[in-house]
Image (tube, rainbow, N blue to C red; front, side, top):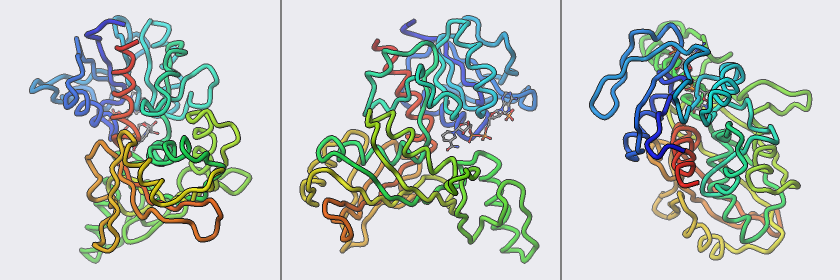
Length: 335
Ligand SMILES: NC(=O)c1ccc[n+]([C@@H]2O[C@H](COP(=O)([O-])OP(=O)(O)OC[C@H]3O[C@@H](n4cnc5c(N)ncnc54)[C@H](OP(=O)(O)O)[C@@H]3O)[C@@H](O)[C@H]2O)c1
């Protein structure tokens, strides 16, 4: 890999794409050249990187010649169509969509957990689902210490997880309600302002949604834990940015709050915020725009013998997407 790579962002104008640009800049990623790609709708748009304006180009089948690393965040169908083309052109694809995550030939990586899997890559690397990534930042260190068997969890997912149009939908609906006007809906099937929606993604025959099953499926692959089980209810909430997850985890070994805190205090990319008597616990409002995830409300689960409950929050545009992707790119430079 070129040590000062030519990087492309596919979907540069989107909610994740814009964060990729800022994350590359903030972390001083050693970029040789940056190419910004989006749809024909964005032709002529300019985005600022390191104080300079860069023009957005239209994604085409020929976009990838000379590019070393392509960060994809333009949706699953674009990844399926252009990801393999980019890999054939010799570039390493880091894909934010779900298109390749469960492909056995594609590493699915959270660098703090399974960076070593990157060595197996064949041109495409997958970034995990955002809710799964935030949860595993706290669950994996506990798993290493106590051996997780299963979890029961509910998520509280921000609208930015659905993309730029959903951020706009929440803003618009709040303004409409304040102005006493009828509420208009485009992105979600129901009003999201002042409401919560117990549906993220489409339903499977089992009654779970696709999003809910990602925790078990992707969790097994990332943690190298084929018997891990997860029963999850994913809920969309009127929060702009950062996902929260309430987790009850059942472990092989007995777990105390003190031992769990000791393990979590050493976990990379994670801060403990847990002084309930002072009303201090992780809040999406304050985790937004932070790189580290936060864990709190750590307590013994009263309904399981070896159970622990916790509440974990993380900026899903960062650890659930852009930051994790850039961390993967940083790891690639070390291979
Ligand atoms: N949002 C999150 O928190 C999050 C977290 C993890 C993973 N992801 C994944 O990341 C991907 C992007 O999500 P997002 O939230 O950033 O969505 P978004 O805000 O809707 O942005 C979509 C991006 O894709 C581009 N695009 C759409 N159609 C295109 C086409 N035909 N050719 C080229 N570019 C096209 C858009 O360009 P235009 O502006 O030109 O339309 C825009 O830059 C999705 O696969 C999503 O599942 C998102």
